[in-house]
Image (cartoon, rainbow, N blue to C red; front, side):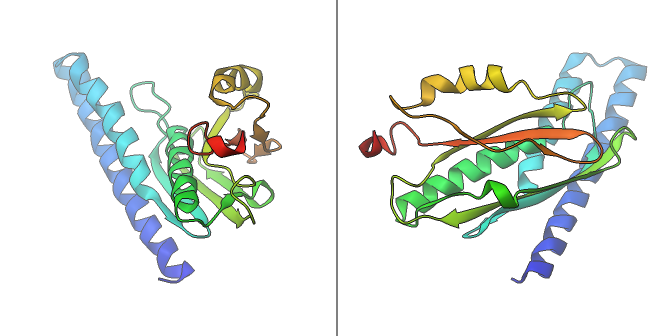
Length: 202
């Protein structure tokens, strides 16, 4: 599948999730009118969050995806959960590369982020996280995360404290520079060596 076909596939999946999310919003409005309790509201936010990860495709060159749909569902920032889903997919794929002997890390310099429609209620959030091959297993990274937010500075210090217990002794987090979009999304992307998988690198 070429890049154009892959992009059309991701767009199609993203539009499907967007339609699902819109249907969920309608259901929530119905819930507000007829009062079916909190169960529907909780299901709605979880359902969209789970489907967001379906819009991400990974290859030897990296992971990319698109989320199109509501910015919030029942107060939950489901659009920003796309970053969570992407980080999980990237981490899984880096581990897969490592297990296959194809050592890699994220190329922070070529990460691409774009957002459209922020503040309108419906957003399009596109992410591309490229990989670069490295020569040895101890140059590779096998864990990946992020910290960010819309129109506010990411809580980087707090996230560093949260992730510190996951590091091997003497190791540190590899953190990107601040990535932003014109509409105010701000992200730091973070990679490190998985304590168990790369224990030989301690």
